[in-house]
Length: 516
Image (cartoon, rainbow, N blue to C red; front, side):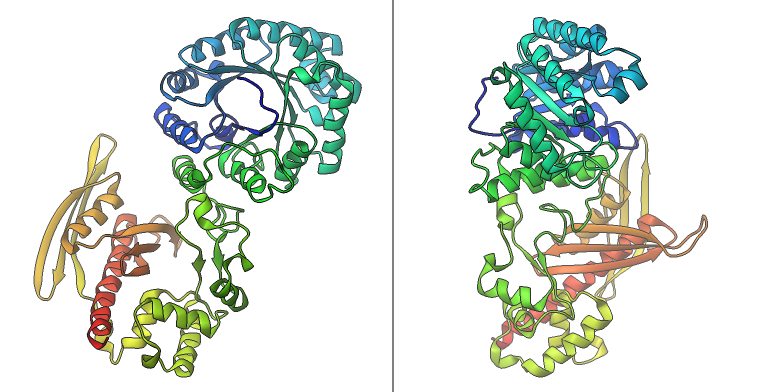
């Protein structure tokens, strides 16, 4: 890979270091799906795995090397001949490949783990980098735990690795111990004291044990590093790695400070984050920077009013820049009347129809009870005259689901509507998916479930479970709640709750259209 010091290379380690944080290893198919999306995202290097660690990891790296085009495909190897040879074999199909070899260099690693002298470790580095370079033109070397390695020794290690052919030298803060100020001094020291430093790209790999991974990585870039090792959603050992989305958007938003851009297609960030979240079964905390559910959500009345007037008042980047459709205005008891009235107008109401003061008071009372008020709640407040308006249109009369390890999940439902029974069946990715698709066949509604949560209401094997989902349709955003000792039934009931709210919204909207 030709070095370009005018940009920052993004080295993604979601499939290697990120996977290490998961309860179970990813299957080759799952790794391949993530790797393909990382290629669409535009990462420069994909660290696909640790080939010698298991036959499954070897197969996954080999398949990615064969099938994923664009990024450099990288494999990890200890400074051991067998590791490096295995890595080279797995990477052989790749058009662009890299061997990443490493060894611990801090006193804790040399003495406490390997029981080797400084000279022994230097000999390992010389042998491993030389062998890797003989098998692959692109070699990266990492002195593990560089943050706690003696300055003089670290300089000698880096100089030796470059002299043996390493094109990239990665400086890992393996345990998240350093701080931005100390990391800057360490990077500066290497640039000032290692005579052949200009022959390699300096990379950084920071962990988040003290919550400073992103700050440390960006500080290193400001001091000359040109590669950041990171993972989607910050996945990784213990508290995780530097979050890809954070460093990429920091560099994009603050181009006035970081004058070395990345080549990431930022509009693919949200899609990538959700794919990794779902495949790895690792939820993203709502207040997570850039990709959290609340990252572009506004609840404060002051903030919402500012957003209505000038969007960048409270947003330093647009939701569209990471692949989201728009910001989300949460209607709560903290929302001001301007935001509530603006939402009513979006739903089709005219100023003349709205008794602003009276409606806002009713809204506040509902928001205090519910927490969050959705579009269907607003329309119901405007349109409801009696309890008849809140009667369900559809009833779930029958549900049967078949699923298993070697069985295609299939669901059959019967729904009641105006005294008639309608029956449909559907297959899906799982029992819940099959049930919702069968319901869709009866109703004809196009519904996208955006959030799904399951919680236990009682204890024991026969515990009652509550499913809460947030779904989007052409008519708006809706919440659905279902309760049962059976998870699939609870999910179907929650989905039916959404279906009936959509039906109610359609009825109310007809009234609005007729009046207008």
